[in-house]
Length: 219
Image 1 (cartoon, rainbow, N blue to C red):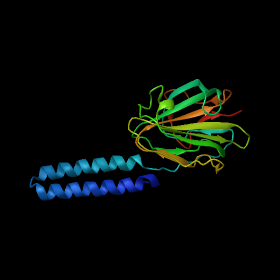
Image 2: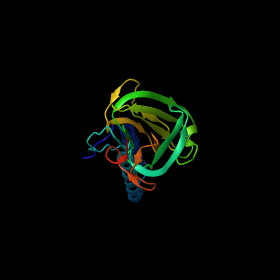
Image 3: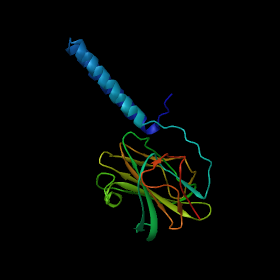
Image 4: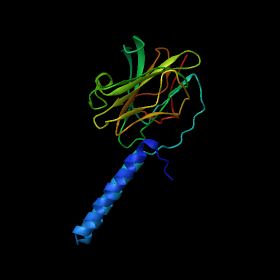
């Protein structure tokens, strides 16, 4: 049985209602059985795609304060050094994971610890792989400091299709690695900002598995 994320339940209900109305209208207005069958098949496919988008599979990972796990499913598209000017104001390593509409879109905390910073930024909707999307697009920025005192930032970044970012993190809250940290509706990416001495364990092109895969080890 598919486990659904709570963020999708209202949308799934509305989609089911709209598709049901469309199919009833086609049945009443058309006498062509082929038309009725085509509309029914298309409706089932559309609903199945929306359903899989909001799936929330259970993921298992033993909590480790020195490991950073993937906050989402997707493809690793960037690993590079950056000048992080929003919070740290120094050089950091950035790992970016692109989520296609077919990926699970649940976001999870990459480490356990105390939320030191959480901010929502309104913005544009450039394609998620655009170099300036992390600065110009609608996004959130969250910094979690692990029990050893090492902070890690992650950013939820909207893409061309995304129109709503859900962020659960609150400053001062204690969070657990691998638990739900938010949701991005219909595509985009997540950036993870690490210390320069972090040992990165993935490479560009790798497929990330949110809540399980280890991206890096902290020193």
